[in-house]
View 1 (cartoon, one colour):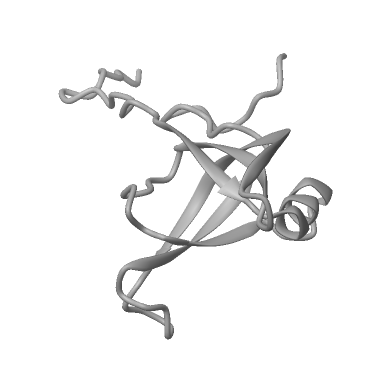
View 2: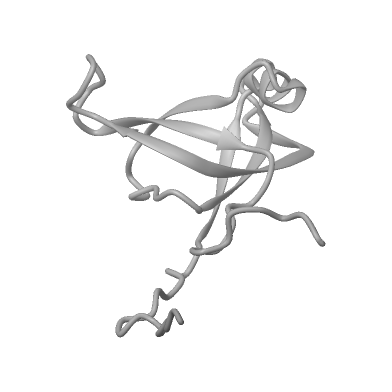
Length: 110
């Protein structure tokens, strides 16, 4: 007979943060279409996997928001100082769905 016990240090979810970020129209269209599943950003927000990004389209000529927004989640952070990325910058992998909590591997309902 196999006995199983719960982990002595249960995994807890880190609080997810939401960042409201400006994005220019061409990049907004590419992210929205799914052809740009990444974004290069100055890492002044200490981005973490699981963070939500509310991308707000900004007209670069008028510096006014267009009212168009899209929600993406950070699936990967490639930090600056590696692969030719400037030290204060990062490349964010973007996902269309929120990450699953630790220990959950599939969303299928049986």
